[in-house]
Image 1 (cartoon, rainbow, N blue to C red):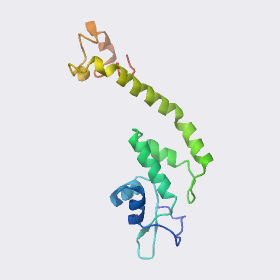
Image 2 (image 1 turned 180 degrees about the vertical axis):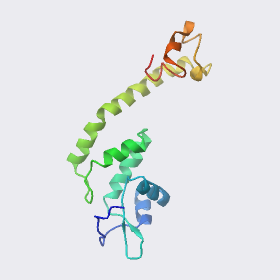
Image 3 (image 1 turned 30 degrees about the vertical axis):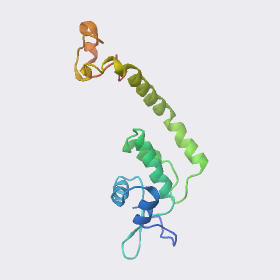
Image 4 (image 1 turned 120 degrees about the vertical axis):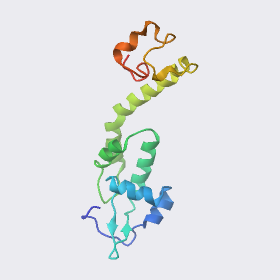
Length: 153
């Protein structure tokens, strides 16, 4: 909880945020424990969320949906202003910081898509050697696992 934030008359209850964002109240509490969103407390110690949390929750959901870790999401959200809805410029700045990482992730996914059918029949992705895709076990020097798919080989 951010102690610098004040309660506003148009703040949302956890149920309202859950309904509007499509996430469970328990997820909101988890996001808050993880430092991804913040709330303020009423005199009765009930949580209330400023409306800008809706965009943050949407960002969290979309980011998680494409495989971004919560740590990366937390770091990104830390660059956004507190207490107000981020502007287009705020989001553009955040986007620039993720561009390289997302490009790398896209390249890995494309490599997986384009090479996965080589091993679909035998399921050897967890083995160190494969006489079909790795004759002579030449990839052994890179270690166990799917070295062709993770860019080590």
